[in-house]
Amino acid sequence: MSKEELKRVSDTKTTKLVKKGETIFGEGDKLNGVFCVRDGVSKLSKLSPNGKDQIVKLATQGAVLGQRSVITEEVANLSAIAVNDMEVCFIPKDAIMDSLNSNPNFAVEVLRHIAHDLKEADDVIVNMSQKTVKQRIAEAFIYLEENFGKDKNGYLALTLSREDIANVVGTATESAIRIISDFKKQGLIKASGKKVAIADRKALDEVAKGG
Amino acid sequence: MSKEELKRVSDTKTTKLVKKGETIFGEGDKLNGVFCVRDGVSKLSKLSPNGKDQIVKLATQGAVLGQRSVITEEVANLSAIAVNDMEVCFIPKDAIMDSLNSNPNFAVEVLRHIAHDLKEADDVIVNMSQKTVKQRIAEAFIYLEENFGKDKNGYLALTLSREDIANVVGTATESAIRIISDFKKQGLIKASGKKVAIADRKALDEVAKGG
DNA sequence: AGCAAAAACTGACAATTATCATGTTTATAA
DNA sequence: TTATAAACATGATAATTGTCAGTTTTTGCT
Image 1 (cartoon, chains in turn blue, brown, purple, orange):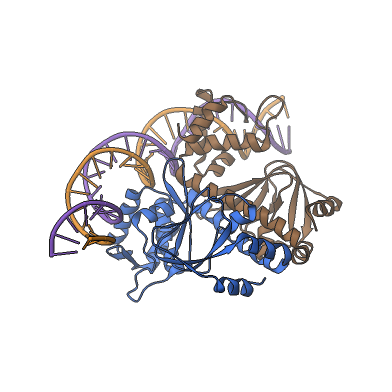
Image 2 (tube, each protein chain N blue to C red; image 1 turned 120 degrees about the vertical axis):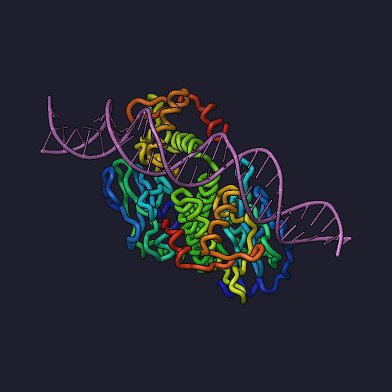
């Protein structure tokens, strides 16, 4: 089954609507298939022992959720929650496993994909441990603009709550709020309600690099 | 090519000796094959923009280095440096790619392996961002004992410098030293020179959990 | 529109962690 | 075996980040 084939299969599947805030699957769930994101954004997070959620990844159109757990036949390591209204489709485990075992091309393609995720995860580890909260928040805004784009008015297309931003960069919500306010005061970003726009990309890049 | 087959191939290869501190490959290197660890331990680390190394993973006997980069045909994302004297063997890229493309079993096996690495990386992200330095250092000692074992006298079989420990948990060397000293004073660990032994595993577990 | 609930914000303070300076011990090699 | 460097250690202090306790603003409903 090639990527095109997989896409075709997934196209024939009835899609399921998931409302903002709803859980697609939770940490510890046994998954009997994977979910393809057709529309909307999901946050993949893990509850730390101290009761805080850490958002490990944001998944959007084209992403496949639960893949890793299905492959290793383990229980889900992360939970997937809709950040906004979503459309997802489901592909049963058997279909995936059959293709994996019979078609090297498919397996290698999935392999490449997961290998890429692993690289990204390694980079996140370095960021988390070596950069300040301020740098990480600056990077987060840049990441949001580059990966989810802007709306007609220049605001980030994906709006996250301050709490979600804090959970992405791994800090307390109040700390995130304070730093975001500072960014506003310094003219790095502007905000209208929850909507945020990058106002001075160059300066924000500097902050992210540790200027 | 099954795992056993791969092992057999690698067994026929002449192994290369790498001395403590030597670099197997560096960040940005183009890899034309992977390295199998026969003996010894390698640290996989990445230089952060502020000039500090972050150790992302410790690889020991049986581990394969550079796999990810070969699969995605990218330049190495991490550097691999010997923590102690090592014995490694080399498998050229072509051999890997041929097997991947022709043998679904092999591809799936590698896939499982990388999927497992990805899970571990996600867990590290959560630890890094949600736990204190003290918790992370406690965890590091537990990890070292569980993964590398103890010598006849009960000391951790793998001895890391304080600097390396700091780079594993993502903190300043001085901070790591201070916390390790505290652990000694509290009787959680004992140390003879660089050698460290866990003295009170239960209490150390408590610290790791945030007691 | 009006109201409850959630999210955003602010201040004061405490805790954690980094940095710099410097002394001591331990390992390494000529 | 010493000298020389590297690793370890500690103090003083600054910077960063977290926590708690509120107030204000926004959002989502009916």
